[in-house]
Image (cartoon, rainbow, N blue to C red; front, side, top):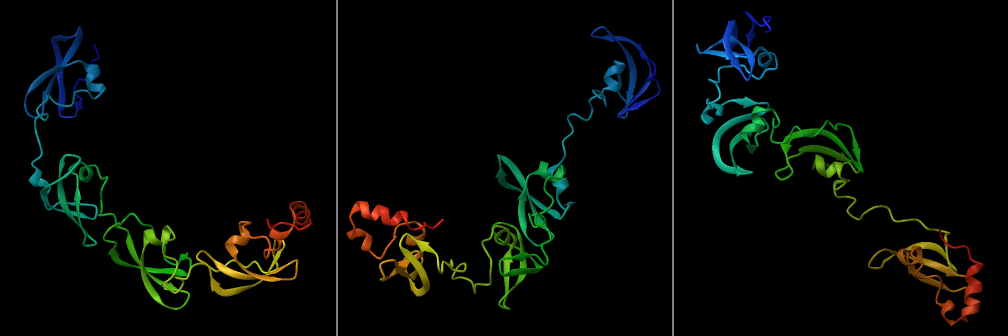
Length: 258
């Protein structure tokens, strides 16, 4: 029998001597628990941590009201509610940022939840997102996605407020001055079939700007950039009247847009 455990403390158990009792054929030592109970335990179960008390703590349950008023990270517990998450009652907590949130008791105790979500975002001060540069957090969070709101300055000089998720996902790239979208594609001088793009017009089709194009036959035509780049339009219309063999030969001489 292992006598090296004599006099040692394992959790709430102090080994005070040997015991004549055996358990499953194993010799045991006599232990005294902090509660005063005596128990016989095989030495290897003390070393492995299987026994740390006489069992007096197994039935003890924490009073839910003991959590009220305590602080976990940025969260202060206000009350135990009937709001359920996965079938379990939750605590109503107030975050240091001012938001209220419901949290499972286990997530508070094990440290998985320490804020309403306002701590999830990193510092993006000075970072650029399109035309916007993040200056500083406002101290508030978005009511839906719970990410931090940032004060930003646009290249046009205006200031605006945007949340971290909008900036990170590219949903906000300006104060609104760029609502018209990205800079139109410049295809000046490019060839598409028999057409050469000359200049962009102010008129717009349903999908893109129109371009004034010069056809190899000498005529000009207005074509949307989407029709040009997709190959939908390759001439002013003169190709339609050409015989199929001549049309094929004509297009073979023209370098196609890549």
